[in-house]
Image (tube, rainbow over all chains, first blue to last red; front, side):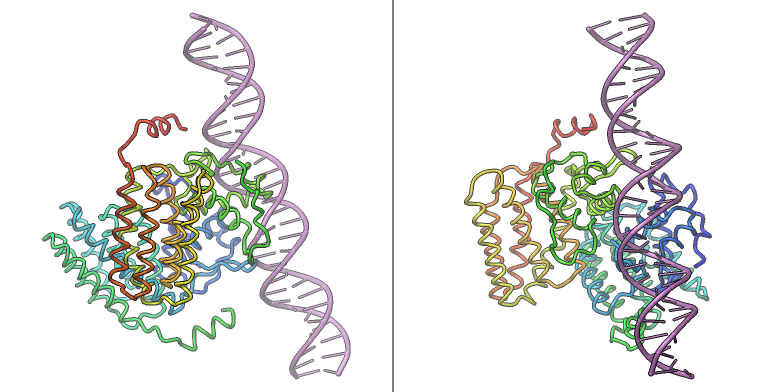
Length: 236
Length: 236
DNA sequence: TGCACAAAAATCGTATGCAATCTTTTTCGG
DNA sequence: CCGAAAAAGATTGCATACGATTTTTGTGCA
């Protein structure tokens, strides 16, 4: 567990240290520096971030609300290990919400937003071109960030938060059940969506988003495997 | 603040006392025993429920995640006072999500579910018939419970949680900005929705739900008023 | 009387301590 | 040598303690 090498610096006026720790841990979970099932003990988190157990505990509680960690009474917190059923629910939720978000974003998008999308797409492309596990992680993260950017453009704080949770959980799911790298394919789809936004073709943006989600889910192998079940049974 | 007269008894296998307190407070907020803006100090909550500040604080943190209380650093927690803009976002989110939930529920509904819906509708009707503030509160709660029941039938735990949050926040919004009692109207619409579910007319159920939400929102008066703004400015 | 400023009280943020629970290791009988 | 019970160790749940910040109260001066 070598997190905490990013010093969660003066990064914005953080009301809470707990929140900063949560953000750090979430990033670590989302891009797989922390594998599903990993135990996150209050004490360890506390020492790593140099805070007391109290605040470490608060951070873990937040992550548990987001579904990124699962806590068991008197046992502790673990990075979530979503079941295939949970994975399906995550994607069902996204299929329901994201096309609507695309439409909302389409109705409000500005040229500045388009520029931000272009920058985001460039970054995605860079990571896809690179090799190595670090680039892979960054690629997953960037791909998620595209969807979060779209959600922020849509201008609904509640839906944005829902999407933050869904995107984070999707990353976990993809890490666990992802088959190939649909990455390149996903990237081109992102590009198409931005194109639709730019030409204010909201209906098309919405449809593209729906298909995009379908493609991502289609790449998953959600058959129950002996491996995870066994690991689960043995308490990991 | 005379809550805690419901003893949150041996009610189910309670994993956490904090969760029990959260549920209690949430109910109190949703049916207006706690008015928006009310201060919820950690100490007071703690003594009321006979726990330490630690666990009271955890409960308040949960409510803050759900958007039912707003916490200000070094100042404490207050029952949320949603702005008109927030209110709009709550209903925009519901318009996006609930029609889809109706469709999902329609595809999975069993006869046992239908019976549960009927029972729920009966209860709603009872409270509408009654007079007095207590019945009013129960009526608001029952109306929300209808939507939660629908969400549970839909069988997606994630969407169900989202709906729990949205319904709770809606109750706050209605309490703040509700004009009349659309209650009777809402009740008849609920009945229609159950009818559509029973006849497996998913498309109709979805449309009815959409209109239902529109009707609820149409009953709100979301113009910015001097009153709340002033109270807000004066720190309440 | 009214206002500014200071002291007091209340409340929050956080660390730490203790009991309860779970996990691991040790020990003992077969 | 192996398995089961017991002890030791680790970790969580919760309460409490203390400094920091905010709010309220009290007091003196204009």
